[in-house]
Length: 212
Ligand SMILES: N[C@@H](CCC(=O)N[C@@H](CS)C(=O)NCC(=O)O)C(=O)O
Image (cartoon, rainbow, N blue to C red):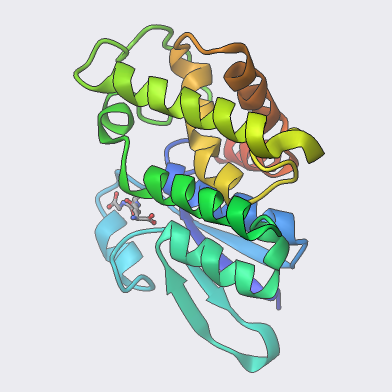
């Protein structure tokens, strides 16, 4: 048996599932991914069978006879970081910023999330960009990308140099930007390209293709 089971939703749409998938992929741990179809008549009942919140993602830790269930994307990432501390930056000040931008993604950017839903392989340039609040969300995200790369990114191409949970949290945004094509600053555009080439992200895409 694999060390972990990660329950996710339909991969082309489930932005919240992609995040812990990328964090888990970055640990090198063995895990199986179980997909529940979203937007189907039986979705609610199927997810209710394993998820306390009625939502995906859900992680089950089977290591050493454990049977620990963790739900909600950011809680799952935090749980993984207890075993793989490199999922957060080593420096305490950088870690504080990484946690802040991760929480900001988790709790915010609702206008952008509503007007520009993740649709992994779709191309809708310009759609949704003039909806209320979307431009402000995009400008704030661009500022986060540019600022983190500038202040903390010297050691590699990710927000804090090497891959961290903050990158996992913004990976679905990179997918959205590829689909809807807002204008971005050069550092933000470069960082989006990094996320789209990340091995965890491309593994998710390959599995999503097989699902279609
Ligand atoms: N705050 C949650 C949000 C999870 C969420 O909204 N998941 C969606 C799929 S991306 C879901 O389970 N929807 C259930 C449904 O469509 O019935 C998290 O961060 O994990």
